Image (cartoon, rainbow, N blue to C red; front, side, top):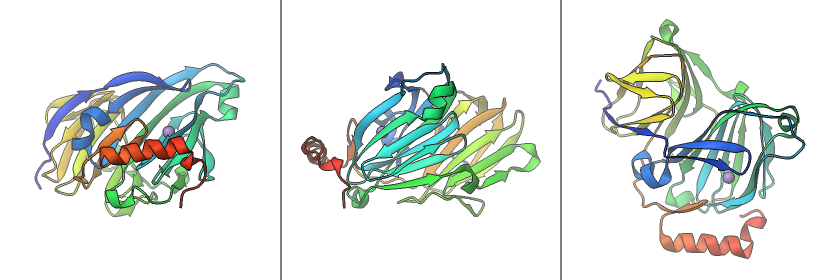
Length: 289
Ligand code: MN
């Protein structure tokens, strides 16, 4: 089997607050990375951050999305979601929300009321997954994937584990339904252990290191860095240099034009103008069909 070659190691592109609830670092950036990262668009990581107890809701109020999917993965704390397609839910450590914005939805993202009241450490990631042109106008959808539904595979040799959120690992299927072929693997890796990950030839692959440090091909990828790999090749051999948490994201590239403006990701500038007009008309207030 041939190696997927490590092509770039990129630092976080920006650090900013999303609303008053999510101090994020952008580890995969639409502006910088979306073409190479396809079908993935963006990954924001709200690194471990301690919040004091409060009565005031923290987060970001109703805002629109169209043309892609938001995937929220919680490691610590609790996040509450509510949208105009009628979906809502609270997710905690290990849980995932997979929201398909499709034709358009408004949603709010806050810390849960209980977590806000007691305070504590929040740690989560939000991944944006592009939709192919044929699916950008589909009805919004929402998948609540709780931790117990996510297969947790123990790696050989005490190397750690893989949680299969989407796609498959060694024939074990993840629960999230995706519109195009991809794997979203949540890795917990133990120091000084190595693992060979096998992926389809021709797929995009990125290793996003959230905590710890991981070596690939003699190069060290530190926490808050993302390694991009060649699409050709089938194997990535990694060595954890410390106890690490990472996301290994892989998928069939869409190879379609990307037009992005704020919370809208379409194929053309004209479609972005339509999205803005639809939002301003209030089209996203009611469930799209
Ligand atoms: Mn959002």
